Length: 307
Image (cartoon, rainbow, N blue to C red; front, side):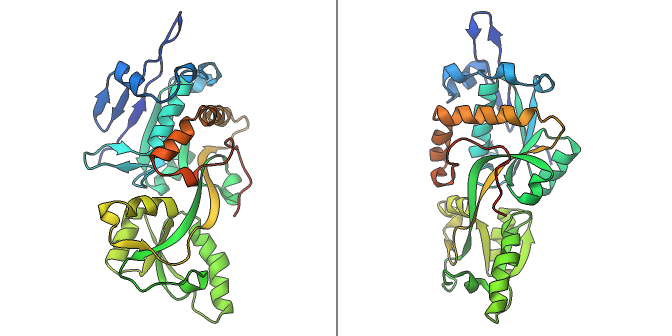
């Protein structure tokens, strides 16, 4: 199985000033330099604005990994193209930096393994947790929450978290909702004399959906924005939000390995801050229906975690 790469090439600069030259190669399809420049939503004045701030070791390019198949963040179209909010945001960051960014969609396990092995310079789609802040520098760029979803034909669950006691629920490996269930919901079940929530982990959202469809589990506790996007399409027509919703509101961010002198994270933070101020960030949130999941104010490096 081949890895799909998204490349945003380094910009060329003329003696007369900034002349944006970017190409986009996605799933084997490439646009020309002029086409990519025309497609950029970053204001011309901001393109390449931070080129001089990019550390020398990253001048020839930055490699990033995002979790695959988590719509609308990163997902594959029927034509085989990898698209989504993360892809567009990283393209905008590339435009601001004037440096090539290569993006690889991978599983959560490979996301962390690749970061720790040095395969990736940083990774996206990671929930900001206290234990992770001990190992990584983390930069917030989205907020997230979790809700319960079932087949639309399933009996209605109550809104209280104790409605989950004794049920079987699927979750995606590595997501913080597992910790929340075990530390916050299960104790309430025990206090009420009920069985704990039965959790089964699946490698990705699609596997979670299949488990519910095949009745291996009664429902799934999923990222609210991911499920909302899924439900809006034909594939999600048989599913519905059902039960407790918007649990464990927290920040999600980019993760960088901690080093004695962290040089890349502050530059990415500066690029994101610029995209917030010029309206590009808000435009991308709106494009993917993520307005309610955007951060308030500027992105924060190593923010206080909620768990």
